[in-house]
Image (tube, rainbow over all chains, first blue to last red; front, side):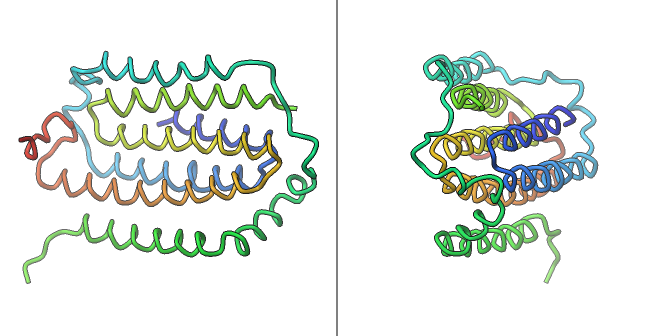
Length: 138
Length: 100
């Protein structure tokens, strides 16, 4: 889990390099702060005595490695000279006013998806409670 | 200046790592963590495209992906709790009740 935390923080740093400050903050807060702690809570609640003894990978792991390598081979196709942002578009829409620009886009152009995202979060909250609830006899 | 192709390469490799973890692991919680890694790779490539085109839509889409990832973690771990209540252990190879 510590390596996943390191991965999330590094991705957040890359978001910062790409000029997405708000996305980096959300990455640290939501991924490293909320989701990972959620997973750690579950790993603490359920103890797995025989998970540590068994093999870590299933019997079909060569197939999985082949699929992963096939996807990672995309990296070979897109390698090449690095290209920065196109100069044609105005650069002031991104950093340093990234937060206000994202907020304005989120509440004007993407208003309906924003509301749907809140609905998804509500449905996930209710669904998680209903699924994980202990069955009580009526 | 950040080369965008490097970010895309990192994204592809990260997605491959997540795919290996999801397909090859036996522990269902680590499979869910691998899904998070794959979603993170997609977020990275969205941010890279947003930077390349100087367009904010990629970042907004990445925010929605993060929302869906949070929802997926909540529901997935709730399902793990329900599974664990019925049968201890989280190995996916034991879950063969739905097999035809």
